[in-house]
Length: 461
Image (cartoon, rainbow, N blue to C red; front, side):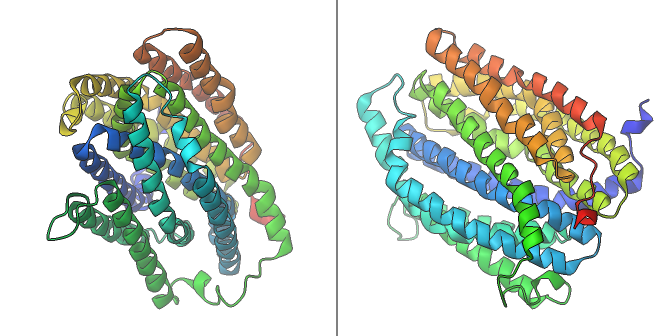
């Protein structure tokens, strides 16, 4: 019974070989985002709140891109599993086109509606002047960050394709260098060191935009320079041709996935908005909690990406039974990793908020929110691994129902009702919403066990 959830040494070597570069890149990225957050927190709570809200909106845009790329990526991983480099090239082109369109739409929405969106988070308890100041800081930060949207989108097209063909080291190295650039420029521009002007929040945004362009340059130049080992890039820019049949399949499979990621991230933004009605202290504490959760949770979150790639390649190669057996071991491994991470996160919860230049009440609240999220981490890990397992076979409508529909049908209504019609303490409210993920885990278990996600999309092509 237990052995079916435990793999061989070679099995775990393959997982770690694929996951580690992804995890290191995401860890460093989130670590630098954390340092950004801490640096801005040193400037003041009002500034931190404004930037936190803007980053919540940018998070929705980033997840929208991720969904669009992932839709094509399902096919990319299976094409590579079938050693069809031409198919990988076509999926890469599709990614570039869809991400360009989404970037234009995203910039238009944030440029014209950014202030309105930010202000929805600033209607809770607190000083009106502080809320107005946070709105100004947040919108200016958002305007600058939009300059980096397109290079970020194109970089994700390159990075996701390289991971699908099991070349994850380049995105990792480029990401490490980019975040180092971001960190150094943050130190210089936020606080005005080495003779540079003291730009505060705007300096943080400028540093991030510069690092986005640097990362794109590194990833694209290296891929083209090593095109003999990256067959998909040869002739990739000679035309925008993608077979109509493939476009149709990607749209059918990918659009629900993009919609899922967009709605899920929007659901997370809505949850944070409902928490914000309890006051600006909650916004600040939730920002601290979320920032450090991203750093600690990167282990099992990166495993989810690897699960999707590994199972997708097995399905593309026609190894259905192997994929079914491996899914159990991969999910079990992800949950086991999350337990260790949860203990580490809870051990650090008391000390992390002390880094910030904020009030004792915000620090105390942040610690308590961290402890709640630590307890919920194994639930998050199981749901995340189940999601990527189901998605690997192209069951995007199922993942849509499992992921974003659950958020909007269960989590958001619960948060809305409890925050609007009760005087429930934010800690109890937060714990209830986090605990609802147990329902999602039960659904995920049933869907994975049924095996309806096991499907070879390439054979259909």
